[in-house]
Image 1 (cartoon, helix red, strand yellow):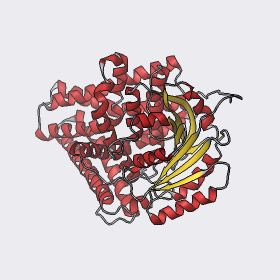
Image 2 (cartoon, one colour):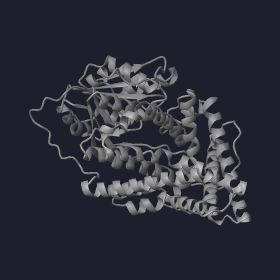
Image 3 (cartoon, helix red, strand yellow):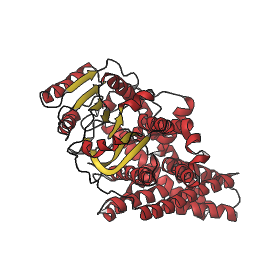
Image 4 (cartoon, helix red, strand yellow):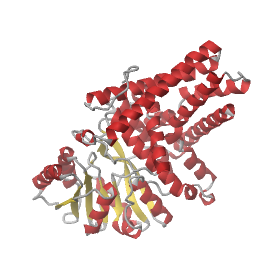
Length: 496
């Protein structure tokens, strides 16, 4: 049974590898990339009214630069307004309101909206603001995003097509090169835009709105019943699916028209990935059957299904390590079938398909792609280590737990984590201990494989052991630096 399960893991990575070949060939054929949009501003065009919504929570330190950029957007006078949707507590809200007041008096009116509770979190804030807004279109930016001045000029005209529900754009990453951790995150997001949104757009299909840096038709939001107010669900992707099922289209602009910050600590990144894993699993349960239905066509179904490797790739590696360790510990026969699976899985660990997809996106989007790609493999241990958080997110969905919702900290907002004393910090410590435990288990199994003569397993198990020990050391170091009280695992290696 263990060999059969490992064969299934090998088949999973083989399908992911086939996807890489397909999307590479398709992107070459269709020229999927980062082409700039050449749109001239029509002199007689009747520009619709736009309200820019800025949902924030304890983010006054980055609000000033965001408001500065938004109030300087190039758009027709009198047809642009701003809503700051603040769910912060009283003291933090006062600081945010002071930033808003400092921007008043210009040509763009700014409305400060403060809720006394976080009901529905970001989705609840957006629904609240949308009910108050008198406009045709709603543009949305998270606190760490800065739109280019021509953002609306290049997106709003696409709403001339009455079927268009939303338009979203590719992002730049201001701190994407600051560390191997942020470089990896940037590459993953780039690959989503290139090989998910970009290929869908090239095929003339509706794409997916990824939660920020986009514009929505207000009427569409209202007809669909608003944003789904549940911490388990990615609000943007959920609304995109509902819009598509209702006959609307979401358009992707394959040009970077906004810049963003990425989580620069491992703890923040893992917390974000756990939240996204909950959302991804919930969306799969809600819409997976319809997304993979026969009318979509075989090629479309293959692209949709094979894209799961981006979420499941590292958790499958964990299961691979656990099953291989069990085989070695139990001393089961070294059959040819077993040896083939171990060699094959070791090869896919080296040629990790999600990492290949990241490399392809860098080659398409950037002139300095070679320099970026040489650094990407250094992030692989941290990428593998985050699998514990992803599996925890799946577990949250299955058990229908509602963990504390913690926004990813932006520049200067570490208090979001530090004030989340009970649940978030305790979870971070337990996850770090799990990483350490897996590292020890895989290291022990690797040593045992040498003693018992399972040479074909040594590389796989020792590599996974190193990855989890590095991830544990990084997690423990960050928890200690943050000054949290919960027990942390001792350093078990080095990190980026």
